[in-house]
Length: 492
Image (cartoon, one colour):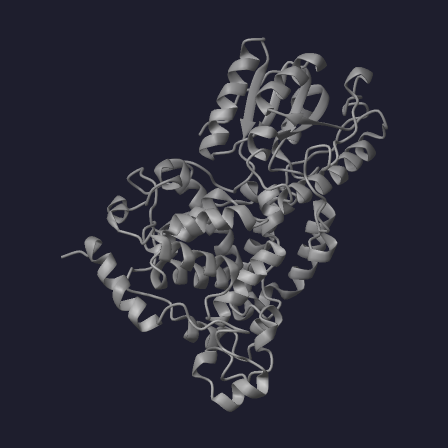
């Protein structure tokens, strides 16, 4: 894609969205190169917010991050009359009103390839154009996007490993370099008095307060850098530790990537430099960052995945949807399946808004291939509860688990939840943390309590069916049923 040719402007408005940081910010960097005066805005878009529960960790995360961004902007400007213009309303209307009131000649922002975001941006672009205001968006949320990494025949990749190899072959230091955002004196403009408003409170917007500190969630740019500093010391161990939920293995930066309080370039630059030195942990973590790019380009080229299977023949699968299926789904949501690792994982997401990546695969496989429930039900539940929810990655992960997506695991590979528990939480530390009623069971018994000896259950104070549920399905029987269910897509 050729670079945009931009005019020089007297003033530009930078629209912050999934990019809540001041450094290494493409739209801001570009605005500072092409405008004498730069304003900044964020809109709590009611078109999105009105669909959310009234207590939402993501809204609280954004709100806290905006306060830090506003303070950093004022400090960078050395001007208390500068700052972030934050509005609560429909973005389509608010951005036009702000742009007109400020008298800017252009709005700069970043690409967002989610279908609803594309529709919104098209409307904003049109309304601004009707008033003689330009709209420019830039790549920032991923390293490579859209059609930047294609096969030799010019088609998008549908399998990860060749995509990753092409990504690694294509990437250059320039792709990972930080975008400079140092402003000239006075360039970060003062907010006109008529437009100065405090950042609306969560209560003003109809949301309840969330104690992020109690959830060990550290929002904002400072939270991202704190986590990165900690992970930098552990990155070399990532390959060895990432699959064990009771171990401090992941970076815990996923929410920061989602909301852009950290730059993907900073992370990829750090990982890539160490990967080139044969650091196995860095190589694996870099692969995870590349997966993120991969799923975003899949959504761009195949937007039907948002509602349907990537492999369209998988839409022929008949999922259970009756009253019993809904009861099983509720048991899954509530962490009451009788499979301790599954229940512990669901307790983690329900309590904290986070779930360990290995466990996302385990619970997704269990919902789809043990309970026979449509992957879209689980995808929607994750979308509501995960603080790091990203449409492309969430959709890609669920389709991988259901075998309906690009480069998905074969349908006949079905995770055994007991084996997964024994392998990745061998001492039951994670289970004990989130399913404390099982904490008294021996390590060997905690993975499948219904197979424990009566004396072990009694000593631990566990009464199956009362203090802890019996299994809602038999895995072996469920596996046989799943193989039959998937026979509609079996290749002859």
